[in-house]
Amino acid sequence: MDIEKQFNMIAEEYDGNRRKFIPCFDDFYEGTTKFIVSNINIPKRIIDLGAGTGLLTYFWYQQCPDSEYVLVDIADEMLNVARKRFNSIGNISYQVMNYIDKLPDTTYDTVISALSIHHLEDEDKIKLFSRIYDSLPKGGLFINYDQFCAEHFKMNQWLDSYWENHIANSELTDKDIELWKERRKLDRECSIEHEVDMLKECKFEIVKCVYSCQKFSVVVAVK
Image 1 (cartoon, rainbow, N blue to C red):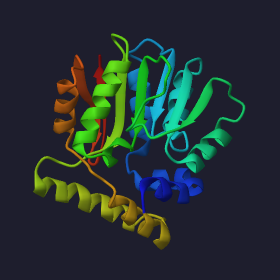
Image 2: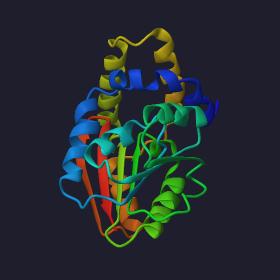
Image 3: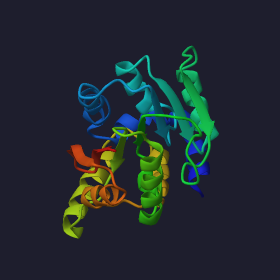
């Protein structure tokens, strides 16, 4: 089953379960977003890649309600949840597309993404990072909230084991956990260190991991 089918199938339950799947949910999404926004100029237009149900945009909108947002996802059913979430908000638009192939044909100064890019092979990550760099103005931002592996195999076993035990002891149903295991087969995680190196290779001037808790980290790159 491909990524589009996988995520369309779970769109309605996705938000409700996301907190259960991520032990550090509040810090990862809300706390880190507040930290970043407190240190930057308010963006004019933000592109959310792999936006899904609009969860990351929700937290950015709380801090930057006057920015324009373009939510991009390959799964239209996921974006339908986002459309319901932001039903009365006029400065949010949607594009159904595969961001691996192209980015929205508009100007923007910030690109954000959450728990999406780790599905790409390293070769495709580099192509995407290079395309993002080329599309941003000087000083533009790319911010990736994602899941990562550890560089060392043994330490990665620690991270995976803790996460698996957390999920097994959560209130998720057996069906939820089985679907998660299927989605995990689509993961192509890299280490934080490797992603930082790839972004630097794509000429971003400043690259820094600003938050990390076991599997989940946030990397900021400035052009």
